[in-house]
Image (cartoon, helix red, strand yellow):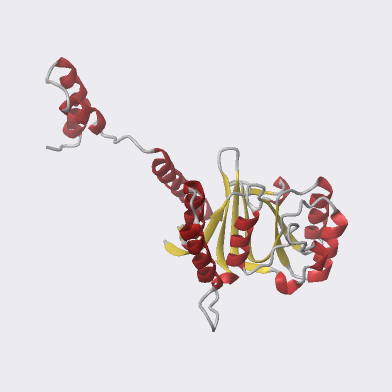
Length: 267
């Protein structure tokens, strides 16, 4: 296991054609350049012009929406050797996109400030060592690892540190509890870490089996953290029995715990 700097946010794969791991319903991109915009991408010619202008081997495109024409253009471009990873993030507000841009070192093509897509240059792209987008009916979201914004500046720390300080100052000035909570979550997301579990085995079949077991453990842990859990081994019923007057019901409630202890040779 390894704990490394990472950022999580709500997102979906732009189209199922870009899922790189069908067994896990994931799109995984490594060592990839990043373009971020709050413009809805509905014009294929604008997107193709961007790709021709920046000339990078891999690019992840974050946008609120992609038209079918743009998706078809990205599929064709990927087949021709420039790997594209469209990522839909309609739930992210402009300030949250700025957090994402800070972490990756990108400049947002922001319609509110008049930053047009056709003015974006290669130097304004962000970068991450890994992006994982999970997209299933029950669970969706993205993880960014190793963003360019982590690199240290000579003058005053990292861009992430500076961004967190700005958000902390906004908390001091905030008079709204919901706004304060939202700002605290954004700081936590920018400054938090991601746990990576590496699974190996002597054969690919065994590795696949172990990965599924690890997935089960991870999702069970996440569910317990979000929704709580009931203790196993008859402990829950036993604790209820201890709070009630002793009678035939409490004897029955204790019996699963006592039987499990007996089966296990415990005292």
